[in-house]
Length: 307
Image (cartoon, rainbow, N blue to C red; front, top):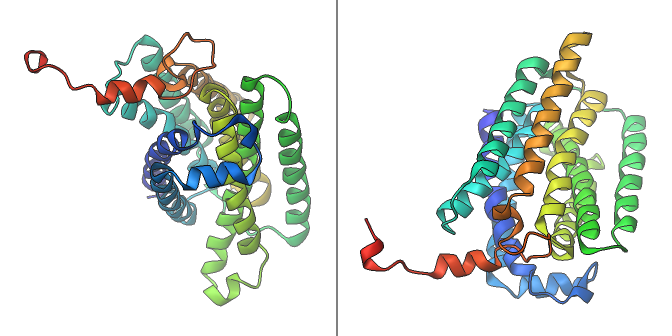
């Protein structure tokens, strides 16, 4: 159940990323890290549809975390890139090439290999207050460092840095959601006596805001690479250290787990550098996502070209 819901959340996230990228790509560059970027997005109907789907995605992810471990749910979300390719191929009529098939194979193989080697289980512990304080301090410091790094540099660097900040914030939010689903079993009234629901509201808004900045700062190649690779890796560490996720031990199994994660990350990098994901221009990473794709989608083939 957790695997299925996480995959469905990944599909919803892929649709969301397409719609929201279209919604913010025309915003002025000077609107980075400003509320004017959000006001520009809100005025775009397509962005609002994407935001509504983002809420659906959160509900699916939260339900998946209720049934499964962080170290299972978050890695499955990397399949978002596979769904993104499917959307670009079907909706925008792009043809998948060798790079796309190779990347998809690496993602599926790495993800399956990790689950077979690690065999994650457990993950039902609720962290103590002291554990939350230490974890929150580390994660918030990492987010701040990524944001600071994204304030300067070329567009690809800023997009990557904001993508990394989004990844850490999303992983933090996932851990808070996991804790809340544990408190729900003790009654909804018990949930709001803890800080997690209120911090989740902060991280949720922060994730949305940082994601828009990552999409707006530069090529989606850079932002999606750091976002999709860092999120599951950080979530696995959080799951093991805070929630008691248990991965298979022993030198051989740990080596296989690390190798599988390396394959997964390699597949993600291959896919995010695909012209279908990055854009359709000269390949230097400066293209706006889907600029040519929308034109492609609007072209109606001549009657004689139809089967």
